[in-house]
Structures are given as structure tokens and as C-alpha cells.
Image (cartoon, rainbow, N blue to C red; front, side, top):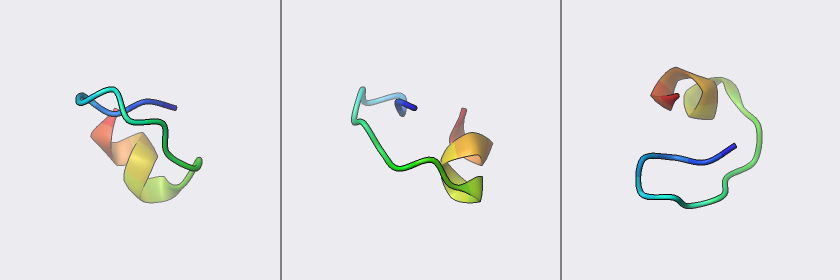
Length: 19
């Protein structure tokens, strides 16, 4: 997954919430 900034992060509840 990628955040708004385009950083690749590990799949996690927090990351999904940011999507």
C-alpha cells in the first residue's frame, strides 16, 4: 500500500485507514 506521500508501508490497520 502507499500513503498520500507515496511512501510504501507495511499492510496494517493504520495504513488502510490512511487509504
